[in-house]
Length: 229
Image (cartoon, rainbow, N blue to C red; front, side):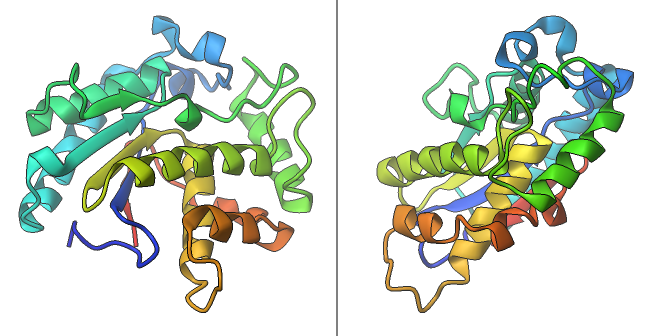
């Protein structure tokens, strides 16, 4: 059911990776905010169709869960490919994109892989993920580590939790950030016996090598919609 949520969270969360983008089609890493907002790095035609289908699937889940649209909020990365994906979903749902229910959130931006990887081949991801597994606290040169990304994602979720309760939150973001978000929330959820009652403290307590190094287990395909349970 769409209303299901983890006991330590006030809202239920869904994640959606952007549709197939032009960088995906060209096999390019586009991870800096400066490049990511450019229209030439938005969705391809297939990605736009994928985003619409994801919106239809999300709409079906909401209806099955008897969730009112007024209780749905979409938070999205400010990259062109995620803006287009989020807008496609909001259009399907009938939620005005230029409304308080849809919000660009810079903390949900793509993980910056650094200048040595920017605009290079997707094949270079293997090097980054090997580094992540070895040491998730070590960033690629000039870029963000897994721990860096986890910290900003935790901040974003804490802000959402402070503002809303009993809502369905859709986070439209990118592969690595969404893998990391699922990793930290899944680990925090498992701490049922934790003495740390608030979310921020729980997440801080699971910011360890054994947890963060496993984020690839939560990989998503383009335009894949998934509930965090």
